[in-house]
Image (cartoon, rainbow, N blue to C red; front, side):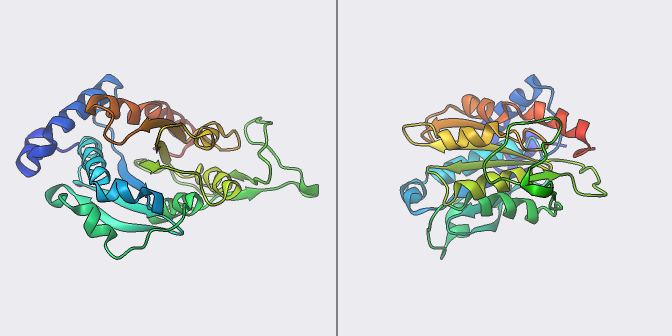
Length: 265
């Protein structure tokens, strides 16, 4: 169940207005009262340096935390970064969120842009099983659920044997300002993690939208459409209402389909 607005106000009064906005947006989609673990997955490549030093990443983190209060009752979000590798750096808690991004990233060097590592690190952190890889003899790839469109170099996947539905999904908000180290590896990794109950909300910053993130949004080899892409330009450009609406777009449809497939109880 969500954290009450009274508790948000007493613990983190600076977040209560956005928490109210999140509650309204969830109610509009019949999602209020549903649960999810919320994770923030942040590009920590060198080109993002100004976003961190300016405090814009901290600001976004606080806005995501406010949304999380209405989706989960543990009062924290999981904070991941990806650069030349990917890592879970800890939690941003409701009762100590000020300056959390600087604390968690202290001593870490910025690097390149490892999408694939980020996808798998989030899956593994939450304890979801890896998929079965499906490859036909002779190198021909077998499509899932009648899908025929293939991605060059990608291997199809199937749900793990003995999969038990999860009680709640992970809502992973993934922010980047550039393309990955390896596009084929990123494609394959997103296909693989589609067997885990994780919904990926891709956000890009910068003047132009990313064709590659749209490609990930549209991949047809996944067992489920597990991602949505929104170019946001600047982290601070959107109002609270517009940001929450962008984050929640397609999430309800994902939850419905994940339940139908047995990924969620």
